[in-house]
Length: 136
Length: 180
Image 1 (tube, rainbow over the protein chains, first blue to last red):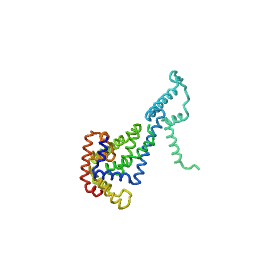
Image 2: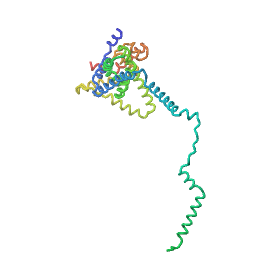
Image 3: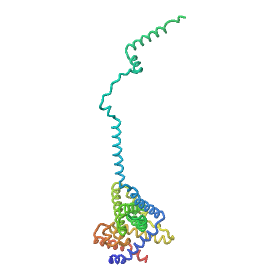
Image 4: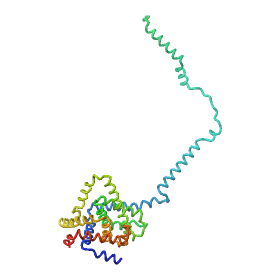
């Protein structure tokens, strides 16, 4: 170490000039640079505080997210199982005959071929009636 | 866990020199600021729990590695965007012009001129020689510490350092005489 100190002390004039010049540069930095260096320092120091807050329960963020997703998956499976009651699986449900709704009946009437024929007949009647001279 | 005020004190004591070191390596103030910020963050995140006496050497290692990473990125960028090399060279030429220090105009002129010539001389040194010179002469690290920071033997440090001294002597001979 002594040798090192001596070596540092025995700088050539040129090396001493360089060191002095560098020292002057570092001491006379523009305000804008000093301010940005100060901000950089504060950011770095904030990083020293942040992990300490997160270490509350000894879990990392990844572990917490993983555990949350696993829990959500398990909860979803449990909900599905609870909603499908055991009765619906084991005992057959009775089939109850219900009357078809009225709309279905009307559709049936409209869609049959006979009804279309009737409609065609009616149209030809109305066309014939329109061609007749007025009785009055 | 190190106290924040201890880290703050340490970082405040080295931030300006770290900036000048990074600026010498990159030739660009913005890049230098980014490098110093990255280095500070890495030190705090990875080495805050280490003994305080080891922080200077650890910070140097982080700083030098971050500068090396920057060089690698620049190399890749130069290969990918070779046509922009001329523009970058022009930018660097502007950065080493004098006039950044806020003393009287005459002092600024003289000091600025000397500083600019010194920066040019340092920037002309090969990277390893510049590293060895800055760590030994300016940061006052021992040869062993410098070897650990640079990741080489003490013999290599001595070689780089003495070559750097010789190169600076050749480049700044006239300047040193006029300054003294």
